[in-house]
Amino acid sequence: MIENKKEFKLISKKNPKSLLPNVLTIFGVCLGLSSIKFAIDLNYSMAVVAICFAAVLDTLDGRVARLIKGTSKVGKELDSLTDVISFGVAPSFIMYFWAINELGKFGWMFVLIYTVCCALRLARFNLTTIEETESWKINFFEGVPSPAAAGLVMLPLILNLSGIIQFENKAIICAAVILTTSLLMISKMPTYSFKKITIARSLGIFLLLGIGIYLSLVIFYTFKTLFFTGLVYVILIPISYFHYKQKNNFFLKAMKEEEEAEDIL
Image (cartoon, rainbow, N blue to C red; front, side):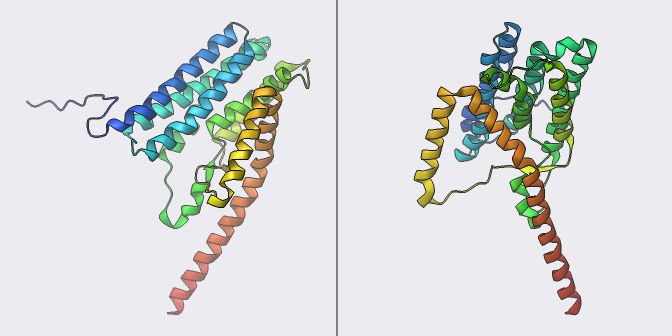
């Protein structure tokens, strides 16, 4: 009797280039878990910073994998697992230790709701396929992606750390934010992807200048900058919805006209 054994290989012999993106992904796991440790130690500023760095690595690992042609099935599964830990478990624990533990058992319920919704959202994302005729949909996510959701969930904490506002009833506010974000994750609300954005070479210098200015603001006004970044994203959610609807209506109209033309012929 011949046994069919499948070995788990972090580094594929056929594609050793997959090591670098997988290492970046593992660093993301470490940052997510470390953020929980920071929260336990009541060092919430470092907890938020760790999640932000995890989000940066989450953006980089996929781009690096595609750039060096180092994509792999292991990398895809590892990325999803990392997202659940860094943007599902970690942010909910941070907010639990900071505020919603004041709600007792109900506070823990919100932790479970957010984490489960994050896992469901990632499972749906992994199964999502886009038809070739609907390639424009690649510019949109279905629901709020988990890294953005992590930022939205922590907005009250970030606002508090910025010194702009000091909350009195922070537990109720945070619970409402967590519940709203959880629903947005599993909803079919279209949100901008930003994955396929292309910049003209002539505008490259302005892009670098903008990145430099933004990083300077992050260094000197960390939490104020992070809060206003989150606020901009919140504003973009309804804009992306109407943009998606406009493109979808245009696509459906074009398909209808094409079908009518075929009927005439």
